[in-house]
Image 1 (tube, rainbow, N blue to C red):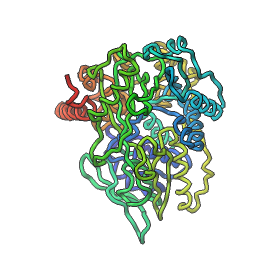
Image 2 (cartoon, rainbow, N blue to C red):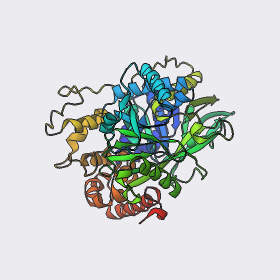
Image 3 (cartoon, rainbow, N blue to C red):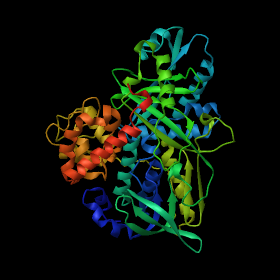
Length: 540
């Protein structure tokens, strides 16, 4: 395919939206989270004409609200889910190799106290974990050595601790990187356009009626196969598949100076024994997670409850008593709903499995369940069902590296600075290379003086805002500040103190007049207070 569908992501590209959607597609993917993005990429790189639509924003749902961990899932071993754990470990290792700067190793530390049980089984599980990853590392540290790794943990009764390595990411940027790779292979991806209903001929799905959420315009799109990748929102379009159990996971973000960590610290909650963690992320400290049945309508954006704030803060106070953390230390909050397949009635939320399921009917393939780490495996399983409904398409569907190599003649290693910007430090180049892939050099070229500096309190460069506004399908201010960048989570009041400079950089790139910007800013501030601030009962 030679069409420049990436133009849809630029400010003036939406003018051609109707013409793009009028094409007949091999695959129409509904849902712009990590599963949908993975399907789009794997389809496009294999020569299929593939379109993805998302009714909100790319990564708006679960895929920007996860725990940000790319992990094998140690607790799945405890439940006997060996296949899921092995698959997750394999995918984690692949992503670490493919996307340094976006997916990075993350050390974990788990304090053990005198009289506590489970040390032997934990270490046995880690030995199996290592074997799956073809690595071997020491896991037990005596108390003094453990305090070097996690100096602020409670010291009374400390017997030592267990350490191991997983990985972390910026989940929304991972989705954007996968989508961008799909565009490079000739796919199209459109945000703020949702599927209203499926089209059928003689009982077979043959496309969908779409509606733009901004202006209400409707479109009819024809496709040989439709893939429902709407995650926790799966089902209403077609009413098929297994029963989902929406589970809410909520998180806190604190300043790194109030909860300084070199490693992630895992602990068992003092009230119910569930695992809770805190780890360094994007220049702040992320704390999570809860695991509760989400009983509100899925049409309403999830948010943390006062009880969840109390729960997570109780865990922090128990593990880090000398820091005297209070609710006023919380910078922001977020909550997401996991698309978990329901098990037996009455089971605890934390005991539900994280396996994925794919199924099909004529013209339709659907995905349910799964986890961030295994998105490539999920995509390939979905495409195996697409293949059954695509005569003449005979791709072997082998597991390929998720990202194509990004050659650079003068900077062959991601730790090396860009040749045209010798003042760019190696850590920034690594970050940009991981998040933006082949676009990293263009991002640097677009930066104006001073825009390669980090925004205080974050690892984000000002230039990332300019690039997002210019080239990453930003339709609303929350797209920019909550997903293209994470400034709305990392900075107090959603970054209100920096909005003047953000406006100076981004308003011309977005082409918004003053009235438009002010409307977007007011809507963003209201949205942030409702969904990312501390609930009213905890305001001081």
